[in-house]
Length: 431
Image (cartoon, rainbow, N blue to C red; front, side, top):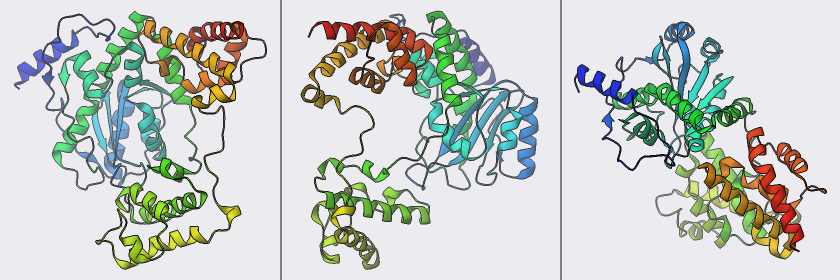
C-alpha cells in the first residue's frame, strides 16, 4: 500500500460510524483495509537501562491515553509472566519493552501515572504487568466496552475490523514470546496490537455514550483498576482436566501428588506443566494405581519415550499417595463457599429453586433488552447467592443492599434489584 493509499484508508476509517450488533444496518461492512505496518515503522526493542530511560522520558512527555498490551508465553513457559510489553501514546510513538532485560518498569509506570490506560481484555494482562511494577490508576477496556455495547464478537481483530475498518494480522498470538531474539514479523504484530487501541477506545466511548451506557462502563473500569491482585488459587490441582472421572479419595491423593511433583519440575525447568506430563496422564495414573514402573509406562501419557528415571519419579508420587493414612486423604469435592450447584436445588430446597428460575428469566429478559451478555448485567454467582439466601424482608432496598454486598456495581444494582425483588416476591406468593 502506498503512503497516499494508507492516508486515504485511515481517513476513511476514522469517519466510519461504530455500530453495535444490536444497531447494525442491514448493509454489509466495506471490505476491511489490511493494516500491514506501524505508522512509524517497527521500533527497536527496549532492552537496556539507557533505552528504558529514553522510553520513560518520551512517554512522560506524551499526551492523552496510553495503549498498553503484554505478550506471555502460555503453553511454553512456567507461569504467566510478561515477555514483551507494548505501549503507544500520542507524542511518544510506540515502545516495545523487553521485561526480561528490564524487569522493573516502575519508572515507566510513574511516567504514565496520570494517564488513562487503554487495554483489550485488561484482566488477562494486569497480573503480569503488576509483577513488573506497572498498574493503572484509570483504564478503558476495549473488550469489556464491546460487550457492554452489544457487539457479538469482541476479540481485538474483530473489533478493529467492525469499528474502524482495518484488518489486523493475528497469526502470532500463540507463539512462544520467550524466544530471543524476537523475529521481526512478531515485533510487527506486537506493535500493530497497540497501533489503533486509542482510536478504538474513542469510537467505543462515543458508541457507549449514544447507548446511555458510558457511566456503566466507567464503573466497570474503575472496579477493574481498583481490584487487588488475584489471590493464589486454593487446591489448584483440583482443576486437572478429567477430574470428573475420579471417584475415590485415594485416587484424588494420586492426582494431588502427581500434580505437585509435575509443578515442581515445570517450575525448575521453566516450562509449561503440560510439557512435562499431561493432565490425561495424571488422571490415568490415578485411575489405574500402577504398582511398578512397567505398569506406569504402559499407561497413556507416559509411554516408551520417557526414561526410567522419570518414570520412577512419577511412580514415587503414586507411592506417596498410596501410603497416606486414611485421615490425610483429600476430601471429595471442594469446601463449599456459597450455595450448592443449581442442579441440586430442586431436591435440597424447592423454594430456592423456584426463586432461581424466576430470577434467571427476569435477568435474561433484561439483558436481551439492553443488548449485553447476562454475565455483564450481573454475575450468575451473585444471582444464585441472593436466591439461595434472600433477605428476610424482601424489598427493592434489601435486595439492592444484598447485591452491593456481593460486589455489584451501582449501575447493576439499579438495573437488577427491581427485577430480583419482583422475582423473589412472586416465587414466594406462588407457593
